[in-house]
Structure formats: C-alpha cells, structure tokens
Image (cartoon, rainbow, N blue to C red; front, side, top):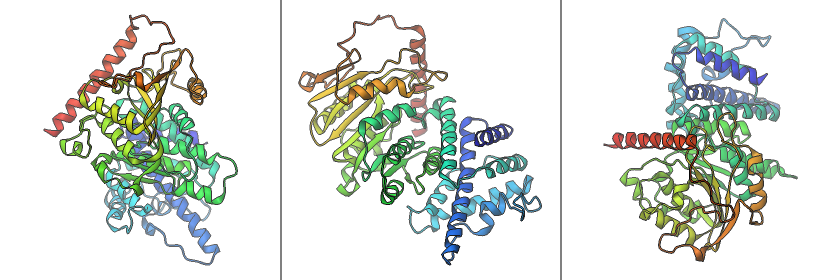
Amino acid sequence: MFEQTFKNIDDALRQEAGCTTELDYIEQTSWLLFLKYLDDLESEEAERAELRGQDYQFILDEPYRWSAWAAPKREDGRLDEDRALTGDDLTAFVNNKLFPYLQSFKNTADDPNTIKYKIGEIFWEIKSKFQSGYTMRDVLDEVDDLQFKSQQEKHELSHLYEAKIRNMGNAGRNGGEYYTPRPLIRAMIQVIKPKIGEQIYDGACGSAGFLCEGYEYLSNQENLTTEDVETLRERTFYGKEKKSLAYVIGIMNTILHGINAPNIIHTNTLTENVNDIQPKDRVDVVMANPPFGGTERKEIRQNFPIQTGETAFLFLQHFIRKLKNGGRGAVIIKNTFLSNADNACRSLREELLNSCNLHTILDCPGGVFLGAGVKTVVLFFEKGKPTEKIWYYQLKPGRSLGKTDPLNDDDLKEFVELQATSAESERSWTVNVNDIDRETFDLSVKNPNTPEEDPLRDPSEILAEIKALDEESEEILTKIGGML
C-alpha cells in the first residue's frame, strides 16, 4: 500500500513544473511527510494527555496543523472538500502564511535542541516548489494516506524513504553527495561494534545513513530495557550537516527510523576550531563519509593545525580530535590520501599513525559510489595509542559495480569475517608500521598475496575515472570561481 502511495506522489510531482529532478522530488516529499508525521505525533500526545486528565500544548497553532489546512476531515473521516484548500488558494496559503509561520520558530524557540527550533530551521532553508495548487492537492491527499502510528508502519515507511534517497544518489553527482551505500555502512558498523550508552557522531551526516543504520544495529540487540530504548532515541546519535536539503532529509530519515528527536545540527562543522574541542564534547564513536574534492576558504583552514583546502582532510583532523581516548573511528576517504606526496597529506598520515591505532584499511573499488568512478578506502582506527600493525583488505566483488548491480551485503561478508581476526588471504595482508617509509608515510595498497595484475586496464574503467576526474575538476573550479 505505502509503496503505491510513494509511486503516486512521484507521478504527481513529475507533472509539477517546479520539480525537475529526483532531488526536487525528495525535498518536496520530505517537508510534507514531516508535517504529516508531526500532526500524527501531536494527535497521539494529545490523546494520551486527555486520558490523564491533562491539557496538551500543541507546537503548532490550529490553522497551521496538517489536519486543518492539508486534510480537514468530516465526521465520517473523509476529506471535507468544502474546507480543503486547492488551486491558487492552497499555494497562496502555503507560501504566504504557512512557511513564514513555521520559519518564525527559529527565532521564537527557547532551545535549539527542541523540535520547535528544528521546524524553524527546516522551513527557513527550503521552500515549496509547487506552482500548481491542484498538483499540490493531489500530493497532499496521497501523503495523508500514510500513517506513522505503529512501529511497523514507520519501519515500512523508512525502507521506502531510503529507496528514495538511493534513487536520488543514482540520479547524479549531486544526489550522490548525500548517499553512502548502506551495505558499506553496515559492514563498518559490524567492525566498530558500537554499544548502548556510547555517543555516536557523524559531522558530515548527509541523509544520516550512519546514524540510522547505527540505530537499527543497536535497537535489534537482545534484552533491551526501557531505559536502553530511551537512551538510543535521545542520547546516542549526533550529527552535523551543512547543506539545507541534506539536513532536511537527515531529520526525516532519522525520525522514520525511530529516533524521535534527532540530535542533528544544521551547521558547517569545519567552522569549529579543533583546538576548542573540550573533553565534554568528545564522543565514543565516529562514523562518516566526509565530502571529498571540495575546497574550503582560508579562514576555515586556520581552524586546523594541518592547513589544507581539501575538505575531507580537514574533516579527518576534526574526527581524530572529536574522539575520546579509546574511541573508535571509521571514515571513508579517497584512496589517494594513502600516497599523496603533498605536505598536508604526509603530515596527516603521520598524525593518524602516531595518535591512533590505524588497525584496518578497507580498499574499495571504483563503482561503490554510484555515479562516481572514484576509488575510496575506509580507515578504521582507535584513538589513544600509536599504530603498530595495519591489516589491509582489498574488496573485489568480481563484477563491475553500477546502478543495476550495486554493492550488496554479501560482497562485504568475507571482509567482516576476516577482519575479526586480521586473517591473511589472497585479498588481505598485514603491514608492520616499522616497514613504512618514515619520510613519506606512504600507506598505499600493495597486495603481496596476489600476482601482478595486467597493467592494461579495462577501457570502461579508464573512461569512468576520466569522467569522474573531469566532474571533480569542474566542481572545484566552480567553487573557486564563487569565492572570487
């Protein structure tokens, strides 16, 4: 039922002139889902309060609640068409009254951690792209059919929403910025093994895939107490996100997965000086896929001891300092980080080896990230003691990864099994840190357990890499142009 509803919503949005991409579809679906979810949540809270003989203080004033403007009902539960806005009346209400009202919460909320403040942030950053009030009415009617009242309903909706996020990633480079393949995230979590009571952090959380999968992993543990569930929902998962659309998607995604009040802040993580991070600010676990290929302004770079314009390298410094001693990290980064000869890369590798136990490096092939041929590695480390040995694993699914045949959980099964004991195989080996060049700190992937590969690469792989590099260069030049 829900799957057909989501399809109907997309079909309606395709008829809307203001929505032209998968990113538009998920953005517009997200704010509508959020308001429907909020209305269901408040209705439940009001009913509970009434049973206790108490009054419930609604977050939204009556005219702005979903049940008043989007789906007013008759006594028989059917849509009251006499009160339901449509056409120009509907778009005028949404643009001129609803959005300004919701945006005002950013200034009137007492605490930035409250859901009221998050409502203000969400609607401050996005806008309705509906040009036709008739199309909007069609979408509203579809969204109103969705229910958030049971865990089973939320679970089904979360899977459908994840599929929309994946489709957004498949649609192109910009969408891919928000989507990390979930099988890769799940493998990273199985290596990190987070525990209930630990704080889990992603400073570049995008669609909040790491937080949501972390919640799924921990909420399925046996013998959870009521206190454990409350801890998971309120005091375990923390994120920061710079981009408006990603922030909205991340909030909605965590809510659908069961984290009712997401601790996600809309901010540029890199504006924080790493020297200002206090012990109380540090966390037990960092899991992240920071954006790579981006550049940062000079004033941002000055927040870091190793100054570089490469966004991912700044994030890695932030993550190292954000961890407590004994804290664990799993961070995805371009594989060129392992061998780049520039001073910033060399210094960062040295710092990572000296301040952390970099115990595992997972080498991923091109194609893991749909829409980008770039090759990546996952760095697994524990803060507080220097590296002695590094266990490498070379992921080789045995096929070309792509939109029609993406990475799956089985592809990573052997990695997870072998990593537990650092076992050697044709795809895995161990390097003693004393054998690493102390001048360059080169950590390149050089598998000693497989024969030399044919130096003639497959033409499709070469073309995919050229295309990815061209797109990356164009993106960097565009950003530089915007700074001038």
